[in-house]
Length: 95
Image 1 (cartoon, rainbow, N blue to C red):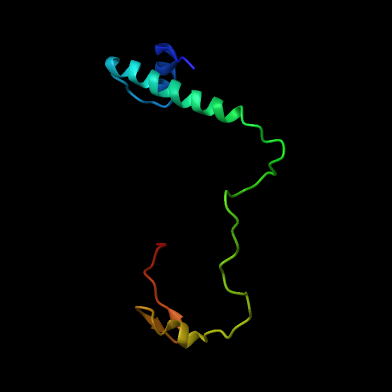
Image 2 (cartoon, rainbow, N blue to C red):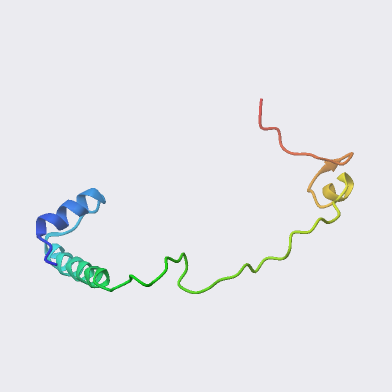
């Protein structure tokens, strides 16, 4: 698909890109090649291909979600930089 200089400059303006004059022709050729490739993909017969969200089959790699014990306040505050009576001490953010 042939892309004109004006179309390249318009897309560059929309993308807020500054393209030097000598580069416009190069970009026009490259963008034309990309659009030709996309057009060739549109011609592929996909009538018997089911819709997919991934190119390859995937499965969940996470562990099972099972209830477990929890930390009490002292255990949770043990690794905090500062704590007092099981509470976290943090810098004051509101004056």
